[in-house]
Amino acid sequence: MKILKILLLVLLALVGIGIILGLFGPKTYKVERSAVITASSDAIWPHVNSIRSQNTWSPFVEQDTTMVVEYIGTDGEVGSGSKWASKKMGNGEQTITSVDPNKSVNTRLKFIMPWGTSESDAYLNMEPDVAGTKVTWGFGGENDFMGRIFGSIMSMENAIGPMYEKGLTNLQTLVASAPPSTMGKKYAIKEGQYPGGTYMGVRANVSFSDMEAFYDKNLSAVMAEVEKAKITPTTMPIGIYYKWDVDKGMSDMSAGIGVPTGTKAPAGFEISTIAANKSLTMSYTGGYFGTASAHAGFDDYIKTNNLSQLSPVIEEYIVGPSSEPDSNKWVTIITYFVK
Image (cartoon, rainbow, N blue to C red):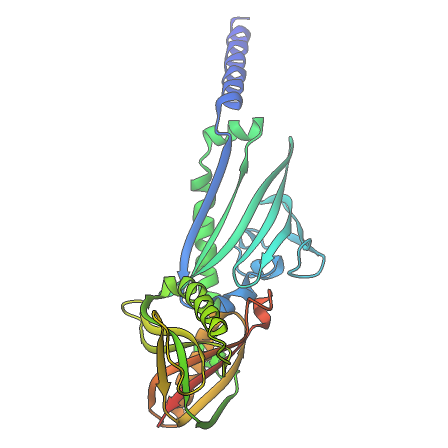
């Protein structure tokens, strides 16, 4: 009888502790990991743009080779996803809620627990980095009563964090399996003669991480000035790269537009003239950060044909974000000068 009383007291104590943890345990949770992958976002995107793609490098799938996975919807589109059943990893669902090509994929996770369904928001984000592309993988949400109990006695960071780290390592390995030279050669490079050109723009030494802001600010300013002065542009907006310093993460560059010879630059702008020269050109389709693979193609071509590269490099933005929201449809004409 005494033993039963002790067991009852222990049980009541455990129930009391559980109630306290359920009431005062962590209300929210979030786990994320980041890694810099030495590739452009365009090269990484095919491996993260759908649940099916993610499962090729997911460490969670690796944990149970007998896991049964069912894919739903049109691969990679909002509303598509998967359902899984696993004796080791449990059962659940994952559905894509939003997609921003070459930038992010957001999903809704549902874990089917003995006491009900637990839901979380997961994400894979990509942003440019000096060494390639920074990929961040994470998830988070709110804890219900049972979640607060488990959140008090189990570290989500320790349980999920290492899995995310392993997954990002798997992704790096998968992306690296496609040599940059192979990626670059899929674009057609044409030899020709550049006739020479005059450009009006803003020139500065810009860090790689600030390039997007530099273009947003200065291309708008150049276009406004051209319209104000009633100058007829001779090209679409361009970027001129005089120097590209990978070690320092800086570029001596100009954002501007082609203008007729003899145009005078107003205060705050400069006129640059590039002489006629032998050139290599390529029409690249895709997001701007993916041009790294296109430039790799130029490097291969120049080495293979025993040419010498001259400064600068010109990118002319034929179709861009101002007229087309889908970055997969942007068109950039890239010009190299050689001898």
